[in-house]
Length: 225
Image 1: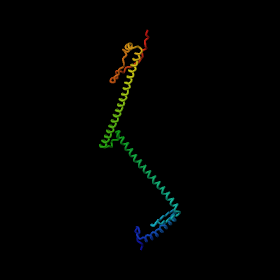
Image 2: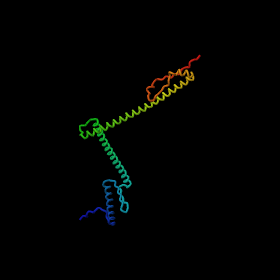
Image 3: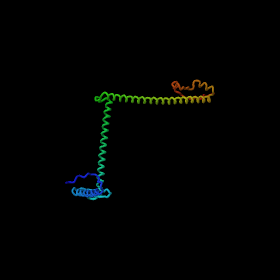
Image 4: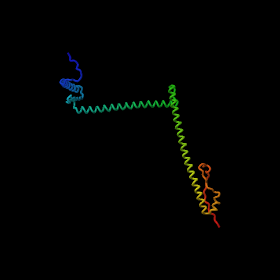
């Protein structure tokens, strides 16, 4: 009679567990040696008992086996990372390509093209989008016109103020001219001279009436006998 199958679970009895560990450890090391010899494989085996004791086997040396293992593990990890990164970029490209196709289709529909495949609800949604876009464009246009009008008003006020200042300077120069003539001719001659040469009166409420070219000229004193 053959032995029955052993249930693979932890052996509760410590003595039986130790005996089983010793037998199976030796059998595992024997199989590792046979695998290395028969198949020309590089084999490294490391075993720790429940008490922490180390058992190891290497077909060449444990150091060379571990170095080869670490190198192979790093290369395999890099390959996995490269593959994962390529797949990630491929998925990203597919998403962007789909978004581009959707945007191009939406643009053509907004331009009134390729509407044959749309139903009534989709056409109504498209009409609503166009109305919203037109409303935004009109609001932007009105805002730009309002800003331009405000800027023109501001510039007009600046020009108006400059005009006022210029007329004040002209009147001041005329007044200085009169004072100079008083000193040269005396009060009587100045009255006769300036009777036809009044000051420029400027009204802030009516600028158009004062837009007359002004020519300033000092009168030469007449020679008296």
